[in-house]
Length: 141
Length: 141
Length: 79
Length: 79
Image 1 (cartoon, rainbow over the protein chains, first blue to last red):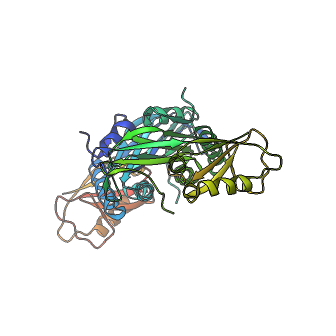
Image 2: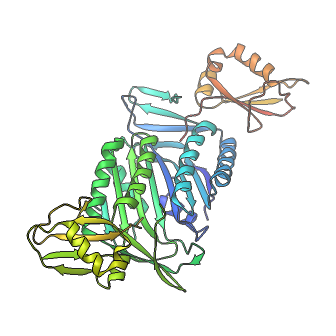
Image 3: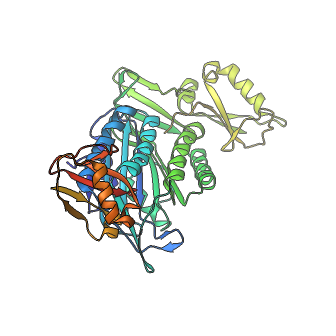
């Protein structure tokens, strides 16, 4: 069984993640997910690839803390967070968040909270590789 | 290619739906989804199956209107809505909503708006089949 | 003729999912609803929404054309 | 020794992803930061977050133990 929190270079399957999530409770009535993927265009420039650097051990422990906090804060039945590192191409999956609850409101609220918090807390950096050169992404406030 | 708005008895695959959604634009950076599934427990009773009745033609046209409105209102790149009818068991998929946008906020906002509106507008009714008898679900306000 | 459709809990209380009602000129949605709710008060207790030819209708004064399809529906519980 | 880690844009500006700094008793996070930002001002211009032994630290007065792992990090851009 795949761990609920992972950092990996390989792609993931949303169906597999959701099946694992659903397997944790028969009382789950709603699942909110967020999938972040690589765009081939950003800030007016064509992007051919995105590469990631991460403080792996800290990122993983922060993602686990985030999952535990979300489960407690929103009364979730289960949650999963997967982030890819390495290099991805346009259209490829980058990050997947899933939150499962008895009803839809906490599932959707928790999903949004987790992706917002992940961006604030988890030490991962994105570099856009374009025909005009590479540049580290500066997040907007 | 699967239609973006469907009512069907068969199960669906999130991966297939998300792949179809992503295929519509390389500028898609965020996808919010909601999956509603059958719980085996509701209002304190064990639920063995859920069966659906629908005003099929109207439900489909309302779901198409909803998708078009969501795309316009949130500036989505694409959206999909799939609802199962017939009879499903505990843990089975019921409804799937996906919203894709350049950034995460409109994708997540639109996903939530679509599932909330679907419940208000789309003529589908759910009956819970329990060992103690069947009963139509009365939605809470 | 007017085709009247019922679904889910309303159909169950009426004991049928469709009725054919004789068309008469000037027939309004209100008239149809009044006639049917006298015949099926228990079913109409839970009617919340109406549709004419597959579109939501909130206008009871709407005149119905011959061969219209009208639905009287309970609160939706899909999703 | 203190192991100092850099990632992404900070590592690029420093030209390295790790440095070994001699430990001295009483060394605080503030001291380490001051020393390194004199040496690498361009890199430290974009430092927003610090971690000690893999956990966020906002307390510059924190004393570092020998063999600590310290990271000076730019704003995150994952997700």
